[in-house]
Length: 116
Image (tube, rainbow, N blue to C red; front, side, top):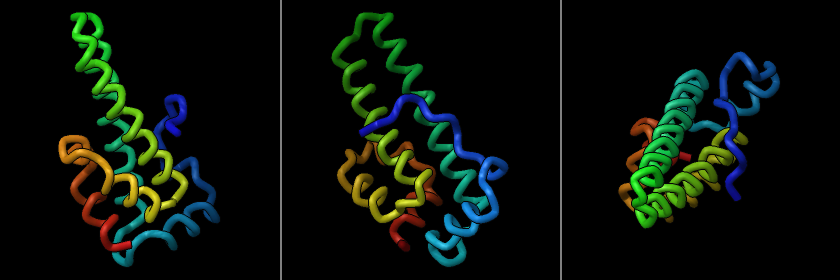
């Protein structure tokens, strides 16, 4: 289930042990710094989608606002799995998303999920 708005994952906030564990869960050649950058980019995309949803509400376009916030919830679930280093679980969730929603994932992150 989607969590309330998480703050963005950053390398500086991870201990060396956490960094090591997370790096061990990434596909070979996918550097932890790249992963953190990609996950942060997804976080930014989610923030943008939230702003879009709020705009739809202000314009009383409730159907599209509902769809937008449903997409936000799906992407937050993926984000939460990624932050926890649960890449296989994140991939499973991504595979269940509509193509338009999957397009919010950074290309490198999307490609690397299929290398897990």
